[in-house]
Length: 214
Ligand SMILES: Cc1cc2nc3c(=O)[nH]c(=O)nc-3n(C[C@H](O)[C@H](O)[C@H](O)COP(=O)(O)O)c2cc1C
Image (cartoon, rainbow, N blue to C red; front, side):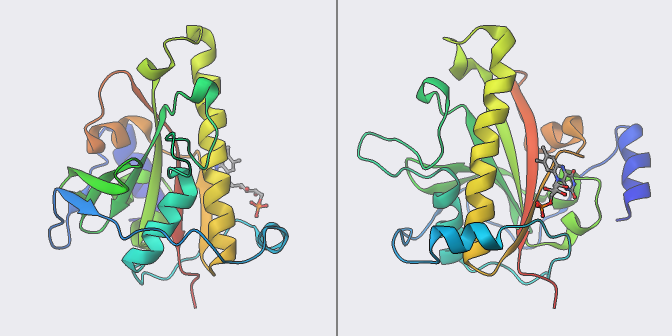
């Protein structure tokens, strides 16, 4: 769908998901992540960039598993994550829009929980490439988890935490031949409705990931 069509539908409150391609399970266990090897950090930093042209080829499940672990997976026995959060509140959740459905990443179980049996990708941003790229991530703040932080600071803290997750995804992408771009130009109300979010959950940012266009 074109950006103009999305802007018009968004203004009318009618930017909606498409039917899912196939049907995903309610709980999708991810294969264990491969947490060693890969491109060196300095090389990944040298290759990091935003890209906006994607092939529609799906990401293999092991690659998706590694990507989500890199984003904000559990990397310590005490439940710590690959990305920091204020007071270790871990208030930013990663939603995963795939053709077969929209999921919430559950780091402790390293699994995907189905939240919408629809293809939510086109709702995740005004730019047209989000519809066809195989994966759109949505970063959502669960503000109730920041109850120890003054209300006026919660949103800023959550954006910082989402930025750290996004950079993890950028570096993973750079190290694995993937293209990605973080996006703030999104219809937060449409995304919230499509994902069935509660009133205290705030859509922060979205990020598209896929193989680069040929
Ligand atoms: C907070 C934030 C919001 C952004 N929003 C968008 C967006 O909505 N759409 C987009 O195509 N790029 C977006 N970008 C990507 C920037 O345009 C990109 O990072 C910048 O042009 C620098 O390019 P580089 O990432 O390749 O270094 C955003 C970046 C940040 C940090």
